[in-house]
Length: 590
Image (cartoon, helix red, strand yellow):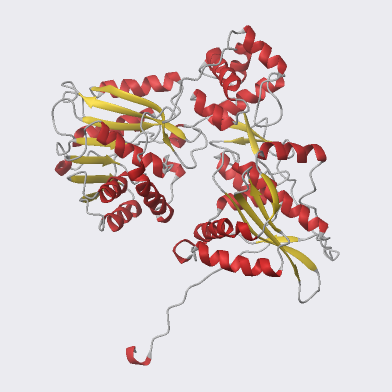
């Protein structure tokens, strides 16, 4: 059975990989796909595909988060894996470092800097690490003795580690490094680092450079320690590490801190060979040290490796100009089938398909029903990647008659129906321990914080993001009517989510409609399920009022909210356009 499941998803780890998923399910249940990915080191799509194969065999429950069925528990027992001992440190969660209270301020400041900083570019393997990870990386430098003092070279810095070093120094009362040099190709990242670091007291120099080219001569042999988080390919690892080595001072025992995502054993062997070819040796390794925002395929985590130069490093062959594949997208040649959870449509995703990434598919919605979400399936054969899954092309339009009949409006379609009692109960279980209720005055501070966050996501620097102002405004609205104001809360009653639906009337036609005004959920493990619970409660409120039309506005850059709308069947009907004009000149300045 283990072999059959491994073969069905072409799992490079084979039966041991299936064992690891079963073992993690036994220990963590109920467990999300992301939890299992983090526990096993397997990518999220692979874990999802394995879960589907195990469900087909009746070993894993169909409801989520997943559990082993009785048959699955029997298999685990027969395999000798029913003993569950977890020796992971509960203080550091296996990361080996704990952020001291004195640096909580640094975490808060870095979180704010991330919100206003450049966005991640997934096409070049960018996925920003969390503010906590930034501080942990600085602590790793301090713990290893690489700081304080000396000079730090950052080969690529979309994670803004340079600012983390500067902010930590500012919080502690003085610089913890003599100089930080950032080498990156992005002018937006470099400009932002220069702008922010100017007021933090740490000397930060930025160099715009394409790392496919050797480092500028002025940077060679100048730095005491280097750090890099390269593209997650063996080629990316070798290229970025080689540039780090170019910039380090000659001699052994200089540190290179290397972040990377989990890969299959064969792929990791390639990476380790690249490390050894550069004359570097592993001095430390922490799995799941790095947490990333938006790195869904890798479960949002990656490892952190402390490398040291040796006497062989200087004799390693230099990496000259590089022109080959570098990013994961450059190397991806196989398509994977994704199944729509709403209608079962199977869609190919990957190179040569209509959708080259599952993110693009989510954005557009299922080609059959317009909904989602999508569950990953098997890799498609390379020789005919899309034959079994493409949507049939529409037939050619007939030539219109000379005197066509007047067009009749298309019938209105219903985009959402109330869930069945079974589906509603399943949603309640997934969102547990959080439940919904009508909001009241005690919730206003939390609601104000939610509205401020919504404003920041939607309007950036132009946002009104003072929670107190939002609390006061919503308090006045609540005095008039609190109907349609819904919060999700935990056992202690503290709101973890907020939804607001108001009933309005069209001044021209007199028709009543609902305006979906707000939805926000705190970063919980089951955040998506709580959001679905809130939105369902809002739409159920609309039905109790006899409302058949619901409208909502969303900022074009708020992709998560657009995805939620799409999942519930909302269709885009208009697009708001904005233009800024120059301010009128006064008489004295003409």
